[in-house]
Length: 319
Image (spheres, rainbow, N blue to C red):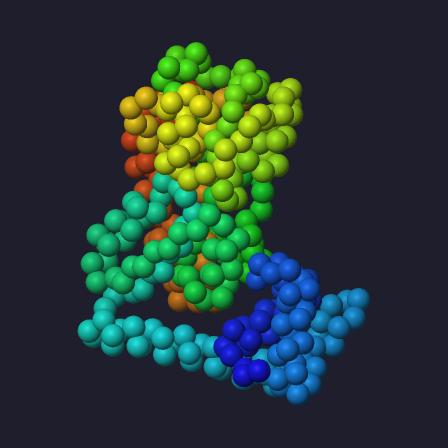
């Protein structure tokens, strides 16, 4: 097996974490998979890189040598990539922003604000349903920033290696058809939706433990769940086949109503993450500010949420 840069990053992560299990969590991998990968790296280098015991993993002499070289090679390769990007883009462009995001209201506004503030910036975006995947890409240097959502008080993935800033905390509403019997209510008790069918998008959303716990406290177990894309979820709600959880900033179209849930039993936190040892850390404060402004714009475009915030301070865009 030929040694690759990703192998050096794995070795560095194990050394920084102090154990294979913690490193696996940081990298978003199963521990057996990381252990097998580490063994292949050790075979390629001709010896053990770590001494492992009940206290964790400590670098051997060979491991120290590899780590010393990695500290030189990895930053040098990152610098090469940045210089190559500048040359490929015709000279000396502005900063580079590689932003990954899960489904949410912030990305479009963030890109718009960054482009307006830095016209020469090189901005690239990517999306995925998985917050864990985004965190891993930040840790591996494939993304500069990640925009994710977390349900309730759940911890952000990779929080030992990624710096996270809280952009906003929103309540979760219920999306129903305008013809639904509850559509005219100011808010609805979750238990009144016990007999509904639910539509949900895949990913790290509130249809995990948070929703199950909230439903159980309201005295029911959710009925049929349709897992599908956003457009299909909206269609099923509009025609009355299902209801759906939605972010409070969801932009309503004809035939849809967003109902607040009494007591706000479900919350959705918007986080922006970056690796503290990369150039992204230098611009993180400004990017967080743009992200908060983008979220505030989304709130202003959602009258049901704006009205709800007037009665429920403590949510919305973070100061």
